[in-house]
Amino acid sequence: MAVEVPATHAVLAVDVVSSTQVADDQLDGMKTDLDEHLDRALRAVGLDRADAVQPRHTGDGVLLAYAEDAAPKLVEMLFHLDHLLRWRNREHRIPLRARMAVHCGPMREEGHYHRPYIVASRLLDAPAFRAAVAQCMATDPCGDKVGAALVVSRWVWHNVVEPFRIMQVPPARCAPVPIDSSTYQDLAWIHLPGMDADHVLSQVQHHAQLRDNAQLHAQFQSRPPHPAPVPHSDPAQPHDPAAFHPPARPRFSPPPRPLPDPVTLPTTETPGESASLNGTVRAT
Image 1 (cartoon, rainbow, N blue to C red):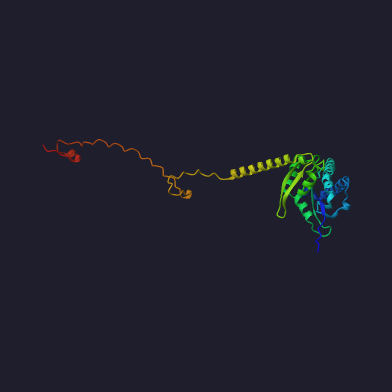
Image 2 (image 1 turned 90 degrees about the vertical axis):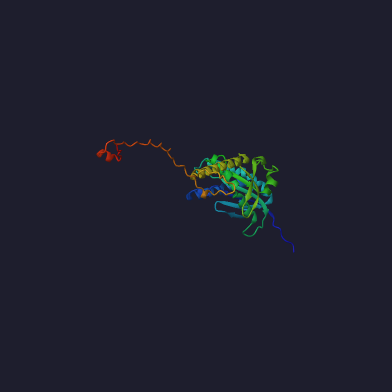
C-alpha cells in the first residue's frame, strides 16, 4: 500500500510586535490595521488571503499556507508590508510593527495541527530575532523607519534568499540566528529592512554585555567586605580560616627601677630617751 506524501507548502506567520504592552482599547484597532495592510501587501505580490490553505488566527497574528512556489512571493511581501506599516505609523500615536516568518514543509490540507505552522511559530519566538527587533524599536521609537522584520527557515534561505531571487531582500544584509527550543533546533536567517542584520546583532550583544557587567558590579557592591586571608606558615597543617586566632600583642613591661642606696641609721652617744627611740645605744 502506497503511503501518501503531503505536498510541500509555503507557510507565512505574522504577529504584532509588543502587543502585550498595548492598552486593551487599542488592540482591536491595531489588529484591524494589521489585517488591512497584510491583505494589501499580499495583493501586491499576486496573492490573496482567500486562497490560503488552513488559515489560522493567533490572537495578535495570523498563519497562512500557500503552494510551494509562493515562497518567493511571501519573502518579497516583506518589502510591501514594511512600507505600508511605516507609512501608517507616521499618522498614529502608537506605532504598529510586525514580525514575519516564512517556512516551507510538507503539510496536509486537512486536520488541525500542522508541523510547518509549529516551525513558523518557533521562528517568530526565537530569542535572537526578538532581541534584534527590540533593538530596532529602541533606535526607532516612532516606527517610521522599521515597520516589519523577517525570519526565514533553512529551506527558504537556501532556495529563495541566498540565490538572490528577491532583490528587496539581499542575502548580504541578512544574518544567521540559532533556533533552540525544547521542540525545535535549527538555524534561521533574519532580515531587517534598511539595516544590516549583523550590525544590529552586534549591538544586541554589546548591550547585553553592558547589562551583565552592571549586574556583576551591583552584586559586588552589595557584598560585605571580607578580611584579607592570613598566609599559613606551616605547610604540614591545613589552613582553617575559622580556627585562626591572631597572635596576642605583647604587653608593655617598664624597665626595672634602680634600687635606692642603703640608709645609714643614726646612732646615739649618750643613753637616754632619744637613744631608746632610735633603737641603738652605745655604751661608753
